Amino acid sequence: MIQFLLNQELRSEHVLDPNLTVLNYLREHLGKPGTKEGCASGDCGACTVVVGELQTDNTGREHIRYRSLNSCLTFVSSLHGKQLISVEDLKHQGELHSVQKAMVECHGSQCGFCTPGFVMSLFALQKNSDHADSHKAHEALAGNLCRCTGYRPILAAAEQVCCAKQPDQFDAREAETIARLKAIAPTDTGELNSGDKRCLVPLTVADLADLYDAYPQARLLAGGTDLALEVTQFHRTLPVMIYVGNVAEMKRIERFDDRLEIGAATALSDCYDALEAEYPDFGELLQRFASLQIRNQGTLGGNIGNASPIGDSPPLLIALGAQIVLCKGETRRTLALEDYFIDYRVTARQESEFIEKIIVPRASAEQLFRAYKVSKRLDDDISAVCAAFNLRIENGVIADARVAFGGMAATPKRAKSCEAALLGAQWSNATVERACAALAEDFTPLSDFRASKEYRLLSAQNLLRKYFIELQTPHIETRVTAYV
Figure 1 (cartoon, rainbow, N blue to C red):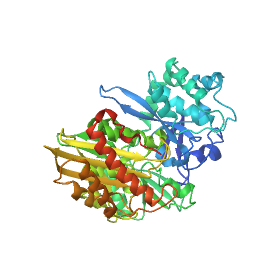
Figure 2: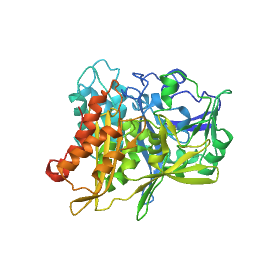
Figure 3: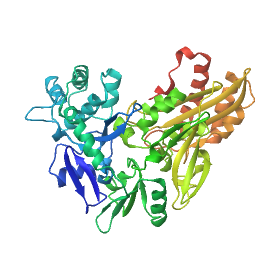
Figure 4: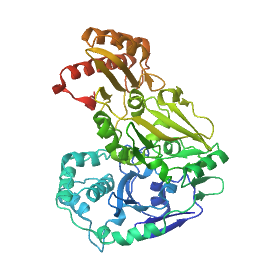
């Protein structure tokens, strides 16, 4: 059984298809059609809902954190112990919510199909911001697409609801909602079962390890932003899933003198502060990682575990010398991240083994780390090329070099020939040109709809030149904002 709040209504689900998305649950099972399906792949934001989770801040105060999510990529089992809010829940006692009023008053809707998604993104923005500037508004709405109005009136609505924030029924009932969420907080492994399909929801690493050992064929479900596409786009059935999002041990970020340890189930949006504080370029790239809805849902471990050659975080982590801790039963092993990737979607992970945490070395003053993402648009897009450079230069000589790329091979990969051309050489334009030539030895990229092989290789070489120019003249630095 799983339990969650549908706004304030307690829902207990015993027999339900675990492959059911929240989008279809709302529309087909509950008769709530306000949430729309636009793409079924997490790109358009028409299906945006908000999920509330009970959290405790550094002062010990309990509060509800609201996150916007793509309901088309969210399986119902991931709602266990949480609160689900859809657009139908905003109107209260016959009055529109302030975000709905703002969309009306600022003329932010025409055909109205995308409007519920915008409203829910604005609702989450209002809940999480005492004052939202234009940057926060753009970030909150970057995952919502509109074909009718253009975005100026929608951004005007964002400014109105966040600059003149009004208390609402959710504020008035916060204490009650906290009490209800505490009452349904999971205490043991949950399960959603439809007979031939099941999803198990463990609470501890030990339980997860036992379940995965018992069901080695199970698919691990974290954010689901990649796995759910098998259901929504390829119409496959997932007979057994194990949802890791309720394993608190795997959602921690721990700071040590020499490293960060990030639980594999930590949402990308929760990784931002820790990684940005150490490596500003990593933080900037995370803000360009898909959309806020995806970052609220997708996890750092999932972005590694799916072994995509165009995942944004692996090249950066490889360049930083990150490691992963793999768990199988009671056994753990630590592996350099670069050794995890074997071939296209093939990894060093053994049967029933899962990523428990990611170990990231803390920054040092000697490191010169930069990251760049080339994509067809700034927001909500996948890399054609992603590059990360991490050099240490002593007295004008390159003492250490780690260079990694995504989008250039079947796996995220270090550029060993390029590194060899840099190591021990003077930090000069001539050295950089030799290293650029060496990139042709490291990679034979493919052509696809994102970029041709010639474009990818030239882009990789130009990003190394860009890195050199920025270090020589830091006042012109643009970091990860490269796009075509």
